[in-house]
Image 1 (cartoon, rainbow, N blue to C red):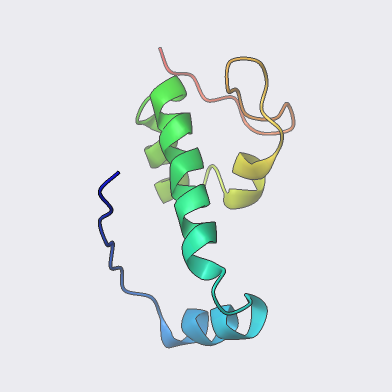
Image 2: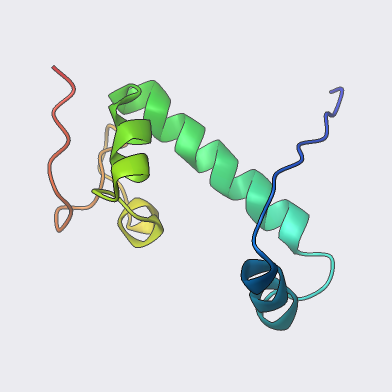
Length: 83
């Protein structure tokens, strides 16, 4: 598999927090896993997931809850209607 690099801008505050909270060498793997999970959610529920993240109606804690049989988000989160 050919690999690609992704560059994003983050705030100085987030960079400092990341350096203090995430062990060296783990951040790339964490970001790849989070991206993969978000992409899985978009494949199941459509781009409404992106809208929910961008508007604050869905956050990482909601997204990380154990999903149901069809990749549904945990029962405690708001329902995302993809129709």
